Image (tube, rainbow, N blue to C red; front, side, top):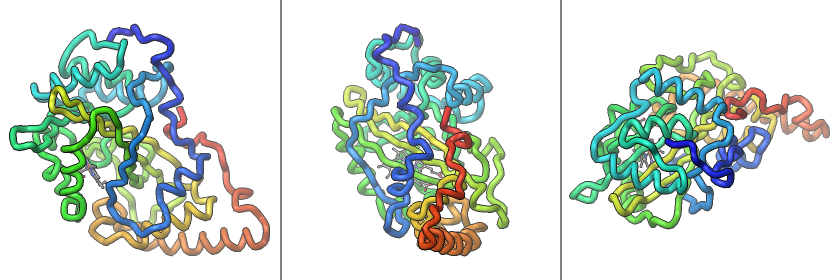
Length: 316
Ligand code: HEM
């Protein structure tokens, strides 16, 4: 990409959301209902097509090191992705790539925080993954999904196709070009490393892993139709937050407890939580009681919690 962005076209604070001090965000994330996979799509005005002013932020350093190290999956490509990618880059306005195809994608990906996946609608009307740059997958291998339609991509996710498969297809097929739609996914991991590609050999939870030491991974996802090339850009911006810092809040504590208690065994296994769920649920019930006690005794639960965002991997 040529560096000819105007001052107005670059914004850096877009990419630090949410701060872990924004408790409302996490209260809404876990919500008040039992766990279930949801479409959860919201029409948004968030402008994703900006490059951060500060190119030194940690997320871009991590991207560059994976892409330059040719890490598996980070950039994956088929020729069908070329026109879709060109249409995507038009969204950046004045910033135009100096090269094309996978090379341009690798360049963009080192300057733009979200992972991106390009989909192309085939002759049967099915959207297939034709290329993209994914540096921070949450336990899946992008290169293994190349060329597959959405239903097949989602096959390892228990119950998802049965519960939401048709609605996902119909949403993608009717995605309006003038709007963007965002949704969230969350997961938990024992370390704050962004990249959890299966080949990165990152550890999974051991049965005695304390919940306060876990990290919450939030995927801020966004869908953009690229109608001229029969494409869709699927963007994923990952933020990582210390669970210990969030557990000083009663609503977040009870929301997370409800989610863990109500998740089916197969979903808990898929999310890598099967070994720890039972002991975390017991711990959370105890912790919830002590937060309630401290409120009754008029001591604020926040008196006991360290409230900086320093531990957050996303607080660049
Ligand atoms: C409205 C559309 C979509 C919804 C509601 C949706 C929902 C989900 C959910 C709930 C999960 C499980 C995540 C977790 O709990 O850890 C998942 C996983 C995944 N989704 Fe989607 N998804 C959508 C569109 C897409 C698209 C367009 C792609 C593009 C390729 C995609 C690729 C994936 C992949 C690769 C996984 C991980 C699969 C694995 O573990 O092997 N999704 N999705």
